[in-house]
Image (cartoon, rainbow, N blue to C red; front, top):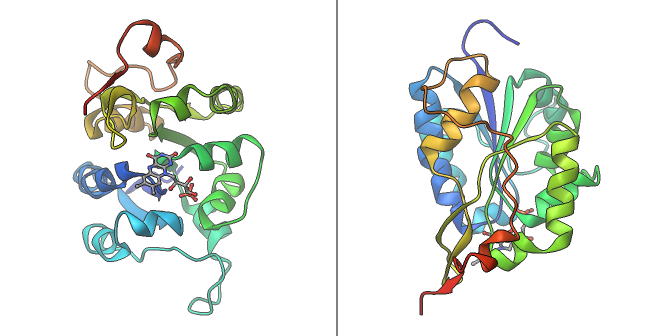
Length: 209
Ligand SMILES: Cc1cc2nc3c(=O)[nH]c(=O)nc-3n(C[C@H](O)[C@H](O)[C@H](O)COP(=O)(O)O)c2cc1C
């Protein structure tokens, strides 16, 4: 790990929760981190590369195959990272990582990096509770990925339920110790299992409209 400015690679995927990536960039920079953002193709439907590039003051990468840079960017990025955060992390990217798939810039960096990886899942409650997604998250925890959230909250699909991306504060509190930086005392462990199946049983899953 670098001893000077910590380099965080922030992967953003195709979820409504992508709007939080902008604030996350600012907050990480407030902590002295350099932040490079990688967007999946689908993430670009939810947040613009320009927004993240402006806030990070770093080039944003969206395409694995580019002629604009003669270097192999994904391996360079993987080597440079002190921490990879994927926030929001879709069911799709969680599934790909759990199975070692690498078909875009973000998943290539995730497989190539020796840095710790922190995932902030965000999705519809039924997607989150699906056995396949739960299996994939269990597998990723076994592979030493760290997971923060999701939380109970208002989902874009109209449910008040589990699946809302963790708060930016919570993601920061999970990220700082992984960067070797001290987190506020109230920090909760990033990798604490959060069983999804309890939401419907506890009556927490309600339609808003
Ligand atoms: C409006 C909208 C919101 C979506 N929100 C989510 C989400 O929060 N979580 C999720 O897993 N998928 C969500 N999806 C589906 C993903 O965008 C889709 O699975 C996509 O292929 C993910 O690609 P990526 O993982 O490469 O970014 C949403 C799709 C739409 C149209």
